[in-house]
Length: 110
Length: 113
Image 1 (cartoon, each protein chain N blue to C red):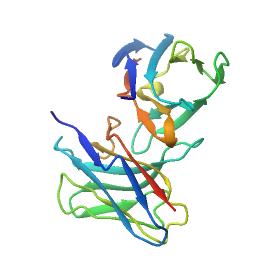
Image 2: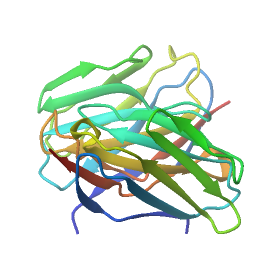
Image 3: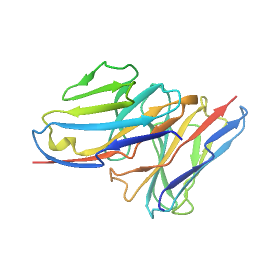
Image 4: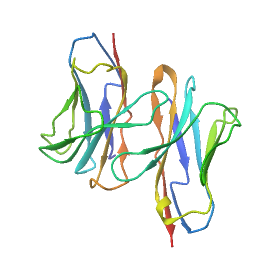
């Protein structure tokens, strides 16, 4: 059965710290991996990754995919309190189905 | 075990037919949501409900309808007016509307031909 595992499930850091969030997957016919930031009502799309080894970057956030080892990481440098959220990882597989992970809850303390 | 169930996992319909997707939660959550996930795009909010008998349109509500007669249930009807209904539909719930801890169901893949 397809699955997506995220770790840690919860993380508390202080402003200025760097964090690494992990997402591993077992999905049939992998097509893409998505990262979201969950705040308020609807999750905010962060990155879509399809190729191994190519880092995607947006400000203090970056992500990379390893299709051989079946995982992705999301890095956040110089964290701010506004980064506090649940970060979701989702993988698109066979038949354009998506499997969502449980999320990592990040709390950034001042 | 508490959680959200969506059924069926795969659904096939002919064009012009309405179809209803099921979403049930036993988490005692007040808020429930429907999203649509298309390849290469982010999640898009279709409808959400803060409480029983109340629901609000999201960003892409056209061609969809919902009801919230029970706290546990938030079915989504994809009507024939929806121009591109084929997609992956995801239901979620949270304890409160502005809570960022949403729990997601396994999703339903709808294919309309």
